[in-house]
Length: 488
Ligand code: DUC
Ligand code: ZN
Ligand code: ZN
Image 1: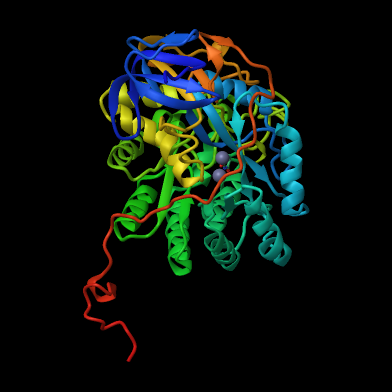
Image 2: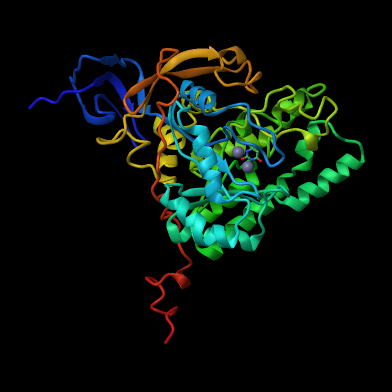
C-alpha cells in the first residue's frame, strides 16, 4: 500500500549527527514517517541545494525570568520562541528559576503559567535550585522529575542563589538517583566578591571592570571543585557556559578519565572579547555577561575544544536585558558594574554564528553542527529519539538551511524584544529558511506561520550521560586487576 504524507521535503541533503545523504522526508501527523527517494504529497517543500537538519534545540536561555534582584528579561515565551524559531530552533529549554522564598513546585507552576499558550515552538524547563531544603530534596525534586523536568541548574556564585559544597553533593545525589542531570554555573563566589570590592573601593566602576572582577581563576577553581564533587557523588554533571581555556582543559581531562562530565560553551566566548566592554560610556554594558567574555587566545582555545569534542552542547545563554531603564540602565547611567544586569541576547544568532564560522570555515562538519546544536542536547536532556534527530518516528522538528545565503547581522532584523544585538555588523553565510515544529511550518521564508500556543510542553525522560570513552586506572578496573580490589 502506498504511504500518504501530509508533507514531503524533497531533494535536500539530510544531515544527522552522524552522516549526510540526499533524500526526501515524508511527514504525517507531525512525525517523520519515511525517508527515501521520489516521495510525493500534495504539500511539498523543494529543498534542492539546501540542508535538511533536525531543528535546533536551544538548551540554555532565560525567558520570562526574574533575576534574584527582581529584573525581568525582555523576552517572554512569545517573543523568545519567535526569535528562537527565526534562528533555526524548533524547541527550547529555558530555566524555571526558584528563588529562596519559593518552593520547587510553585516555581514550576509559575513558569507553566508563563509559557502555556505563548510559545510558537515546543519547550521544557531546566529547574534552577536555589534552596535545596529537606522538603525540596525528598519530595519536590522527585515530583519535578515525575513532571518531566529532568535537569536543573545550581549556582556556585551569587549570594542570593549559591549553594555550598555539601548542598551541591545532596543535589548531585538526588539527581543521580532519578537519572537527572545537574547543571552548574561554576565561578568562585569569594574571589569575585573580593575582586569587586577592591575595584569599587578604588572607584573603578565602569563596565570594563566587570571582566576584571571575574578572573579566569574563579572559573578554573570552581570547575575543578564541581568536577571533584561530581566524582565523589559518582554523578553526571553539565558545566554550562565555559568561558576559559583552563576550564575547558579540566573538562577534557575529566572526560578522558571517564567521569561523566559534560560542558557547554556559547557564541559570546567565541566571537566577543573584553575589549568590547571598553566601549565609551555605558556602551560596554551591552557586552556584560557572567562569566565574562575573555580574549582572542581564549577564543582560539575554545574553538579547538569545540572541534575536538570537549563541549557536548553549544547554547546561546540568551539573557536579554535592554539597553534602557527596563534592563541594563535600571540603576541609572552612573551605575557601577555590580548594579548592571548580566547577560546578552543571542537566541536567534547562535546557529548562524556556529554555522558560518564553524561549518562554512571548515572548523567543524555539518554533522558536528547538528550534534552541538540539537542531537546532544536531546540526548542529555531526555528528548531523544522524539526530538533532535531525523529518525523514523521522531517529531518532524526540522530546520531547512540555505548554506550559501549571506547576510549581515543588524538589530532591525531581530525578532526578540531587544534594542541591540552584540553581534551587530557581523557577516554570516548560511541561514535557516524554513523551520518546522511537529510537521507544521513555524517560519517559512521569513514569515511567521503559527500563532502563539503552537508550542507544547515536552515532558522529558531521564537523559543519557555516558559512558565516556575514557579509561580507568588499571588498579581500579575489575577486568584488569585480577580481583585485587575485591575484599576477601
Ligand atoms: N548565568 C547564566 O547562565 N546566564 C546569565 C547570567 C548568569 O550568571
Ligand atoms: Zn550561569
Ligand atoms: Zn544563563
